Length: 234
Image 1 (cartoon, rainbow, N blue to C red):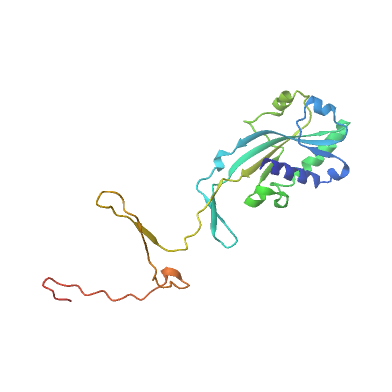
Image 2 (cartoon, rainbow, N blue to C red; image 1 turned 90 degrees about the vertical axis):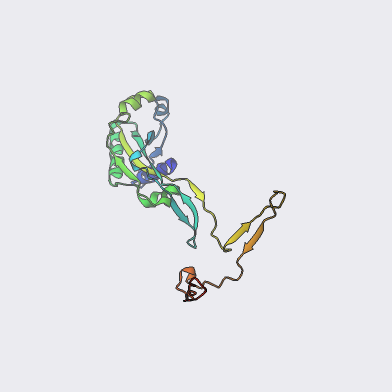
C-alpha cells in the first residue's frame, strides 16, 4: 500500500508539469550527503512517519465474489494508516526553490483526496477514498525540526503532507458450494466392541426442486387421522 501511495503522489505532482520541465521527483531521505550530490532541480517527498488510525478500525468480514456471483473468499476489514511526508525542493537558488515549492503546494491543495485514476494495486481494488492533507500540522507527531535534526541536515522550507490510506484486509478462501445434496454416514459397534464399518446412506429419489428451489410452495398431503384409544380413527 505504501508504494502505491508513493506512485500516486508522484503522478499527482508530475501532472502539474514539473517532470516535463526537467524537475526530478524522488523519495530519498534528504540527508546532508544526499543534498551535496544534487545537480538538478529536485522535489523530494520523504516519508518519515506511519501511524494507524485506530478510530477507523472495523470488525467482521466482507465477502469476495467471482464473476458468477459465488462467494470465493472472506476478507477482514481494511485498516487505515496515516502516512506523513516531508516535501522539500532543491535547486541552485532559494528563489527557484520557493517558486517550485509553491508549484507543488498548488498541485497538492487542489484536491482533498488522491484521484481514483491515479490509484493502482490494492488501493484501486478497494475503491475507497484516500484522503490527502497538505500543509497541516499534527500535534502528536514529529515536528519538522525533529526530522531535520535526525537527518543531520540544515533546516529549510518544507511542506508537510499527510495521506490516510487503507491497508487491504486478509483474505481467506471460502469452501466451495454444496452440490451433492445430503449425505449421512452411520456406524455401529460389533459384539466385541470394535467399531463396525460405516454405512453410507444417501437419498437417491428426491424430486427435482425446480427452478425455485426447495423454498417454492408445494402440495401438502393431508395429515393422517388421529387414533383414539380403543382403535377408532377420527
